[in-house]
Length: 338
Image 1: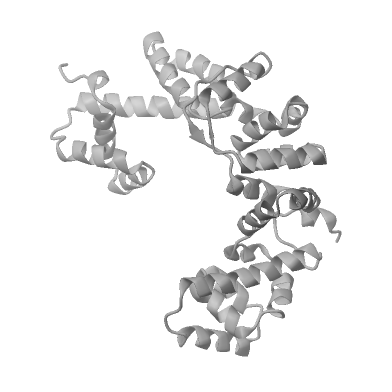
Image 2 (image 1 turned 60 degrees about the vertical axis):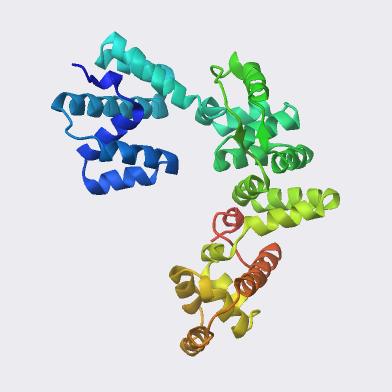
């Protein structure tokens, strides 16, 4: 066939796939693509004309094989995927799919570490230099990174957090060098492109998942060396919408310290879910008054709303530090008994 699927561009294959599925599913797939890809694929769809049954079958088959290969990798790793693909496809087709999937897997730095148990990984890297540990944690999912951070000695925790916070782009050669050091014990080397990792937001996300005592020890250690960094981390660790994570008793404690005017202003841009959580922890009359204040408030400056929200966030953080409220997922549940 002159226009065999293997000769088609990636954009043309994507266009064939999208016109072959339901519109709702096609729209969902497009949402997940970068803008430049959407534009290119849109042009292909506009000019695609008639799609032959052979092209359609081949493209759908390729998509299916790639999806299956990715699921096998997620469950059992690359070697497991290779074995199963060779059993279900011709040797040539299996090698082609494996090559594509391997390239995709290799785009994530330290992807092979994500399958290791946190406890084993901690044992493996705890004696590494803080910069090496920071590089690894910055490329791991936040939950796993937090589990490892908690297990490090307190001084090393502080050193690692400082390095993650100040990390931006890492030269691919540096990543490859670190991976070469891990290769003989854990996995294959993967080639990398420049990738942004780390930063204050990464530290905030990791610490949000750590237990309260670990977070407090790290923040106190950082305070003496870099108070500005501590303030940046604190403001990212708990934002206004996170009040949804505070239990009802805690909400009631917070409301005792907030004036109605500030609360009405703070709720101006809040989600409906958060508003309802706040209102259900107030008397019906108080909730009605706040609602009326919001209704007749008129236009307000975004900076004023953010300032009011930050005031409430500061109260939440202070009460949590004093042990008076519990924030779900912050480790406090482990210290409670029923």
